[in-house]
Amino acid sequence: MDSFNPLRVIPPPAQTVLLDLENGDPAGSPDRPQLCRFDQGSPHWRIAWIAPVAEASSATAAIQEVARVASSQLKITADPTRAASAASSDAYIVLELLEGSGAARAPALLAEAALAADPEFEDETYALEIRHGRVAVTAPRPVGLFYGIQTLRQLLDTARTDSAGGGASMEASASTVIELPAVMVRDGPRFPWRGLLLDCVRHFQPTPLILDLLDWLAYHKLNVLHWHVTDDQGWRLPIASQPRLAEVGGADGVYTAADVEAVIRRAAELHVRVVPEVELPGHCVAALAAYAELGCSRGPYVVPHGQWGVFDDVFCAGREATFAFLGEVLHDVARATGVVDGGRDGGKGGGFLHLGGDEVPRTRWDACEDCRARVVSEGLSGIGAGDKLQTYFIRRATGLALSPAVGGARRLVAWGEVMDDGGLAGGLLPAGVAPGVLAVQSWRGMAAAREALRRGHSAITSPKAHCYLNYPLSRLDLRLAYAFEPVPEGEEEDDAKAGATINGRGIVLGSEACIWSERAPPESIPGKVFPRLVAIATKVWAPKAVNEAISFEEFLELVRGVHGRRLAGLGIVCGDGMSD
Image (cartoon, rainbow, N blue to C red; front, side, top):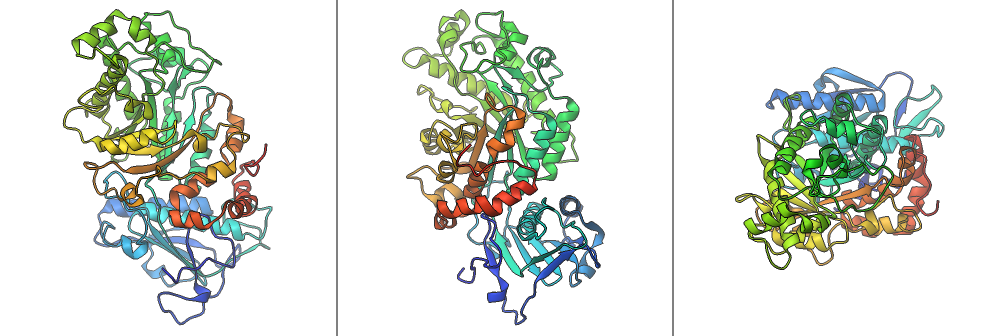
């Protein structure tokens, strides 16, 4: 689109493409737009909305919810009536949901955006137009309206003349005037999966921090919180059917049902998908300490608080009691964390459940009579028997997780080690399940992602060299984070983003940054995550060509300027990502 030029009046958000209407309006409007002024005087700014008349009441409710959240974020009033009369009025932010499902209208908003046909992911494109006295956001889906508001927040934060005011708000002192140039933004994501893993086990992360983190993710248009809540050092979720998990594994911190509900509710408001992870068959010492009969040696086991690394003790693959236990756990976790709706507001739930699968020693299995018997009975003997046994275990777990009566998940994620399957026939999923239902999260590099794509699985890339934000800056600084490319080398971009079907060749859904908390107590999380997460967010939202056009030196200047001021306004204390 030749008419899309960089906005010269204020630095643009790194994730958006702005059109300076002062220097050319593609719609051919002959007028010369003026600055749009936001202030505390009269008239007060309000949010109004336009929903398609033909759409179901659910669409109306969804757009009203976006208006409610936006009014809270911008600290202005949401008009409770339809906005047809406000469409030409000054001092209104008008949210308009386009007619129909959005598939036919999306190219008019942004032809270059990756629009996955996968039903698990919505069209997130939007258009934002700022003119004298009026702001309009249009989108095919409510989530696009929400992201249009986030871009408006970013623009306001950038243009705010009262630097002491900070924050993402139009509220200011009577003397403060915020001026925005007239612009058109047409925007959409490169990938549908843009996330952050938060480890709440090695150090327990309090609920208020998670709620703040959700706000920060949404502000940067990230839409997945990978909630790591079980591991060797603890079990953080209450499980009604297995109460000792929280009693023993959560002795140093456990979330209440009210905590979990608050996280899920806030995430839904901010269009963030919560993906809980239940580690299996390894990283489970806390669970074994509660139920020793599930381990190969039968215990006793002790929760290794403050001890890091990989432990030999894993779930016994030879005992049926293990799978009965996991079925009950997956059932309760999926319903508590919104993987299935559980009756919540009639929604369909987040859909994805992470099953771990990483760093599973074979030591205990090799010495276990039950596991050796399982190897024989399932025909897993020979070279790679341990890898085959893990594949068998994962296949049993995926069957439980996908069963509507048990886990109820629609899609699954597992770490890259599940690709080390020992060549076992039948794969990682129950018979008849399309391989794309499982996304493989590649963290040791990109090899697992490549193999997953070859086998028809989806892929999520989180290579530790670029995405592990728990690493010190001496090992992973902002330059390395910004050098990240989500698509494995040698894979075609169009293939990776098209997402036309989950039954054919695998696709790259997107990427996650990770913050493991062995050395990350709660007070350190914001400063470790930012500003490196801004670099990752830019890579998964903006088109590759846009990222390649911005050198690291230019990006660093933005981090030290625009992004740094925005982060400070959000209450995040961090450096420039280059030195501690």
